[in-house]
Image 1: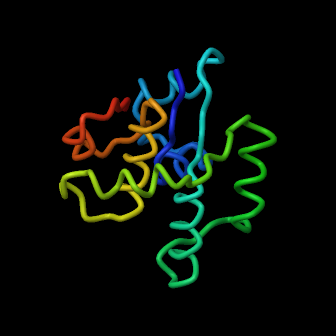
Image 2: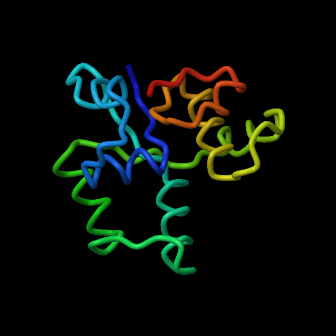
Length: 128
């Protein structure tokens, strides 16, 4: 399975947060699965840091690089097809970053690791 971490899931995994769903953790730890972090999530975290809505214990670059090198999380770039697919999505969700992550998951055939049940309305596979 190819897993796309939503932003909150990525942050909770990095922090070892106990609120993570057990099925989500199992999917993430399964060595048969590949885990990805969207550049949209990195962009979202950067914006939230710059406006004071997110605090990290280390620089964002270090957090992402540790995830890439230490945990094998791959970065998923934003491709033209991803951005164009957002226009085809019904407006179930107001968050533009989540909408892009949904589009990426649909275009790439990925499962989203997220606790956000509202994403289910897009017909995307979600594990929590």
